[in-house]
Image (cartoon, rainbow, N blue to C red; front, side, top):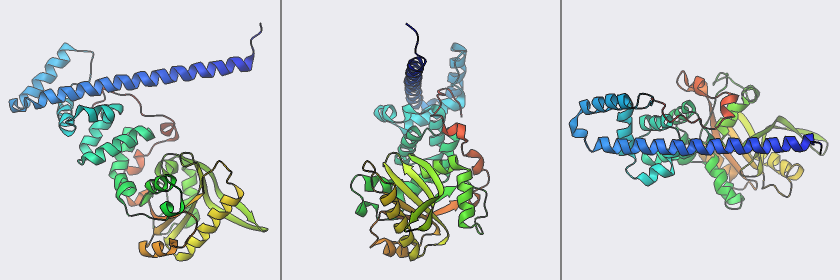
Length: 341
């Protein structure tokens, strides 16, 4: 029987997918065991803290002598293990969250985040988004937890969308958004910011969050023979809906909400199908003027959120270098159990 090329290629792709999946599961399992061992080592060290620094030095030296081919047991890393066990006193917490991300990510969390709830949130976000260690550090340094979880958000999503879509949409709204683009934060016009965002689309998607798929810039809509152009159009794979994003390089004005409401209605009428959830809108301004925005959205029928945006040039020097390349975003978190800080 002759081999069918198309059928063979399908079989090849399925087998490749099985191998990749198996390797990923094996890496996660091994990472889990290593992190568990580090936690138990740290707990052992903490029971003998009264022996002083010399104890750590001797333990590091003797472990490396006993296991010359194994890395990860330097004096500094042993101290991290002690901190790790102290930060997570319950093994169940370790098994559920931090054992699923590489050790280097955990040491970053220990160095940069003191609040247990925030550490857990960043660990879960790392796992969900496949952040590298540098990206995790950037997200912490730019206060992503506060921008996404604890910020006061101006949106009518929960009033205009069915549950749980309204709650999920609100949770994903950041305040402010921080975009890594080359533009003067004072003089940049809307189109300059928009063009720079599209030119760095992978970095833009990283900041917008998990689930956004870019459809187009200045997306054309024709209504009654008149041309209209949406600044940025996305499809959200988790919310299963179109997302209209409008940029304003000025402070918020009430008429901005009306224009975005029109665009959302037009996308709903012209692009949305029976399988799509209602389209949502995001208006990004340099200054959202909370109370003005709140009053403006009160009687708007379509689900719209208003937030501020900042350019990365407004953050401390050096942060831009930490954002990932397209190759970084195409990978999940790499397995590196013995990475030392």
